[in-house]
Image 1 (cartoon, rainbow, N blue to C red):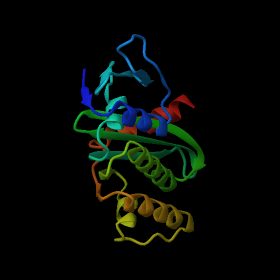
Image 2 (image 1 turned 30 degrees about the horizontal axis):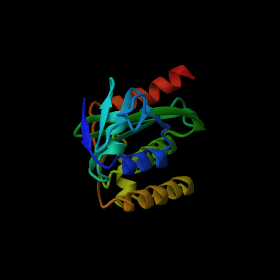
Image 3 (image 1 turned 180 degrees about the vertical axis):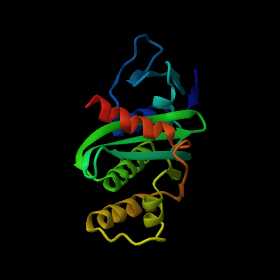
Image 4 (image 1 turned 60 degrees about the vertical axis):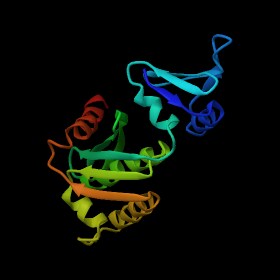
Length: 197
């Protein structure tokens, strides 16, 4: 059960800006409480206690802004083009901070990979991380974003610009190609979204 030494008013502002509903406390000692995913935060005079099965659903939002995250992304398309989905996982030193997946209609695999990367970077930014180490199993996307390969498709060029703008919003970033087994969780999330659709 992590205890975060912080100003409860500032913590509440962070939660509000992240779209987390904050309610009045249940006792005279509780200033407020908030729930997100599998975590509950309870504010006292000079600290916030986070409880639940996955405290990381809230700890990254409540800790001092900044820090480093590992970001994993993957896109999947059944057919090229075909039904597509994205998956992403954000990991900090405390464990998985956030993960998600969704279908994105019909598109190519490469466009799905870019969409997954864009969503993952937006989530990392929303959690307040200022450094990201991004990992994906698409060599094409990694090398295009790093400027090692050209993006001839106008749609991919546009997405590459969006990714670079998002990356430039962090104080430091890295982007590496990794084998699929290292990116297994993001890959599984994208494919589960397709299976469930």
